[in-house]
Image (cartoon, rainbow, N blue to C red; front, side):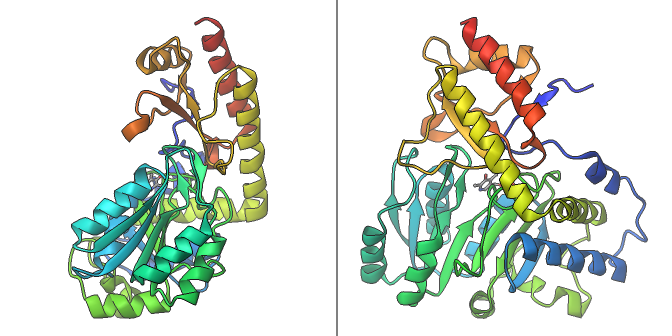
Length: 363
Ligand SMILES: *Cc1c(COP(=O)(O)O)cnc(C)c1O
């Protein structure tokens, strides 16, 4: 029996039974074997479909942050210019990470309740700055927003920016992530958000142009991308193969593709809409501004005024509902419902809304 039978934390999400079972198998041998590489390739093919790309996909053992760091360190050299588009905790965080790597970072930043919309201002910055890389977050999980990205690829190509880096950790498999159409070079993901596996894999798409840069930069480190370029052909892995983790990821992505991506996205839209509508009807206030794009994966809501977050959270948990708090400037002010992947479920959402409504009425 679960302590919190109504899981609504925006990652890690509830892991489906089939995925748990895939981890409970005794695989061929714990060492690197052809069967492991076959599973790696099948899983990479699944991820290519989810990321709408014909470029390559790298899967690393670890979690989302590993790929976020690895992709920066593998492509940037000290002093190179980066334009970081930031609308939330992860967007500003990635700007700091790029600065840690030694890049010369310019931040185009908005408030956390906003999403990108002023493409003229962004174009002017790209034109004057001529960055090597543009970074952006698709779904800002801490604030429940979704940055539209279709314009960005056009600008990247118009000004010959070598790399577009997109954190799609929370949006992949919750809504369309059109990597090739949006001309993304490095599109990042993690296993425990909408993919609905445990937190055991980080993955990313790598464009041909990005691979050339990775070769040139030649970064060596635990999170380096380069060893993955020829890992399958060379029958070589930079570390111990995680058979169980990879099997979980393959099964989780199989489930998504079996349902059909369009159906999966429609399910997320429907549940996200239901969530926003009901929360507003209870008299609560949504966090994203009225001109911001809300995320299909997570809804951020202001904590009611007459209660602290700690007390509100305690009461929700008393009724078996686990939601997320938030981070940075939103900590204590905003709570979040993670309706991504396995949790984009109408029955589960209705149970969660019932608990919130009851707790709000009793305040
Ligand atoms: C969860 C998340 C990450 C970090 O992933 P971890 O797997 O927790 O390391 C990065 N970016 C976004 C937008 C996320 O939601």
